[in-house]
Length: 394
Image (cartoon, rainbow, N blue to C red; front, side, top):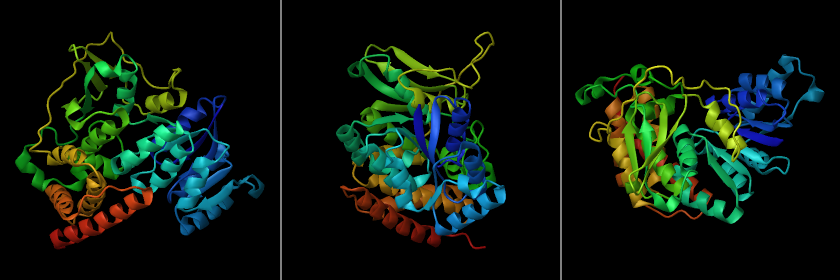
């Protein structure tokens, strides 16, 4: 039986992970559930899965969790140990009781815990792009030193992982990641200046958190995936292509030196890659719909418009630059997206803030997670100043 710590248990990946566990109680057990501030959902998860430990982000959330558990009727003798803060996240990620960590905390908040789990030799199902975008070199060095298993959960990287099992890595010419194109795939470039947060949040395929949905609309999310894939699979940026595939059924492809292409194809259901990360190298029946090949269907593929979606181009440039450029890219994007959602800047202002922040921040070579977090904090400070200058008057 695998015993799990779930970092980000109340988010989309976390709840889908727990659904996989729910359907396979004989295979998986929960040691710790980690959330930010969503104590209502976390309480329901505690009552159902009975972890030994539950951790939240802040003292206020911890107090709220205790109140919520008391109101739930769960006897206090059956409560898990309740913890809060970053050190608690690390503790439950390296505990001797577990062998697997699902890393699904949005942003850099989960970096310390994920890095600690990797250094501790755990299997990590990675669903948080920021870990690799901000600290890819440190993470991969830790994987090599500890022998940890790092299995990507994002559908595209999980698809690439599956494809790369099929042949000799030295014979692979390039990796191709697919993108839905987001809600503005067919929107004229000149109309993007007028789009609203509500329009940008209306993703045609996936139901995700606000930030990742906006990143999909700008194609920044695909840029982060390119960066992550470079680290995970040892590709140069020029060896990774992106194609628009609105049906979101082909998740990744690899092209061999002889021109042959292998594709990973599956329904748009995150439980499949989550389960793959848990069962690898074996496979098991998954609670996802199968593709009905008796039905007529067509799949479209087209190149992305880098003039219309310049943040994707910027991601390639940052990975080529190396060092802290990608950390700054992520931090500035998060602040700019937040400002857009609050209607302080326009949609096109996201790129303007990110590109200007990159120009202002010197590129460094971080040698520790703490240094990465320092760069992240400084990049956010600069990005906030830039968004304030662009703020639309109320």
